[in-house]
Amino acid sequence: MPSLAGFRLPAWALRRPAQLLVVALITAGATAVVAQPSHAHGYECSIDNSDDSNTVRSSARAAAATLPAHPRSAMERKEEYITNDFASRNMYFSGAYIAAVVDLAEDYGFVWDCQSHSFKLWDDWPPYARMAAPTSDRTLSSSITARWTGSDLGHGIASAAVRVRTAAFNGTYGAWQYPAAWQRTTAASVSPDNNYGAWNYPWEQTFAGSTTLNGARPGSTYCFSVRATDKAGGTSAWSPQDCITRALDDRSLTGRRWQRLSGSSYYNSTISQTTSKGATLKRTGVQARRIGLIATKRPGGGRVAVYLNGTLLTTVNLNASTTRPRAYFLVMSSPSLQTGTVTLKATTSGKKVQIDGLDIAREP
Image 1 (cartoon, rainbow, N blue to C red):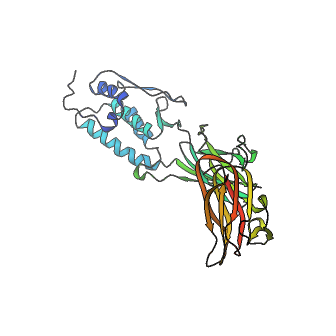
Image 2: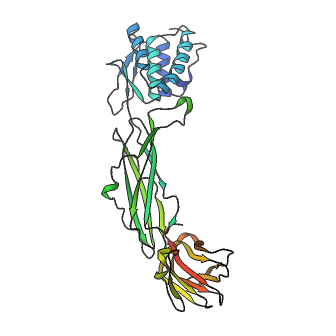
Image 3: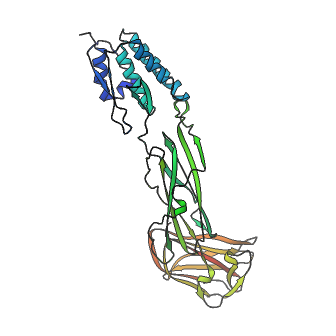
C-alpha cells in the first residue's frame, strides 16, 4: 500500500469530513466508490476510480466548463489547486480528480450525473423573503403600500404570497387574512445577487414586489407578512410581521368646551380646538402599546396633558415659531399592552390647543 507520508489534503476535503476517507482511499490506490448525496432531483450516482480513461476525465472538464461564468472561474481556480496538489505527489488519479470536481460542483449547487457525464442543477434551498415596507409604524392615509423583497439560490423565484391581520384600537388581532389578489404574485423586479464578489452565484436572484391595501380604518393596526416560492417548488417560512397603525381622528374623542372645526390642512379635514384651561377630551376602551398625539404647533399655542387611567403620561407644549399642522408627539411606548381610558386636558388658558387625532397602536 503506498505511503501517505507528507500528503496534504486540500482545503475542500478538510471541510468535508464525510468524504475525507473516500479521498484517502482513492489516493492510497484502493478501489473505492464515491457515492453522491441523495438529492430530491434524483441524480445520485457513483464514481469508480478504476475508470481512468481520458474520456471520463475530459467529460468532467467539459461539463465543468458549462457552468455559469462566475462559478466557472472560481471553480477552475479550485480545480487547478486540486490538480497541482495531486500531481505534485504523483497522485493524479482520475477517480480522485473527478470526485474532487464533483464535490466542488456541489458547493455551487450542482450534482454530477454519471449517466450523462454532466453537471445537473439541483435546488434544495428554499427562497428567503421579508417585508421591506411599510417603513413607518404610523400613517394618516387610508392607503397602505406593503413591499417585500428577498432572494433565491437556484431556479429563481416563482411567486410570493402576502397576508395581513388587523386589530382595532379597542380590540385584539383577528385571524390572518389571505386576499386572493395577494397570493401567487410575481416579482416586480428580479436581478442577480452580486454580493459575493469573485464567489458570486449569478443564478442567485434578488427579487422585490409590492401590493396596496386601500380603505385602512382610523384607529386600526395592520400587520403584513410574506413568503416566497421558487421555481423548484421550495417555499420559505412566513416572514416576521411588519405593522403600521392609522391614527384615530379627533372626532372619535368625546368632551366639552371644544370647538369642532374643519379645514383641508387637518387630518381627515377636522380638528378640535379649545382655549379653556381644564377642557378635556377622552377615548375609552383603549388597548395599546404605543400612544401618540397628533396636534397643531403654532405661535402662541397652549399645552395639553395626556393621561392614561388618570396617570399623567406627559405634557405637550404646542407653542412654536411657525404653524405646523399634523405634528406628531410620542406619548407612550410600552413593552406590554396597556388598557383603559386616554384623557387629554388643556393646562393653559387663553391659548389655542388644537387636537387632530390619537395614535393608538398595538405594536410599540
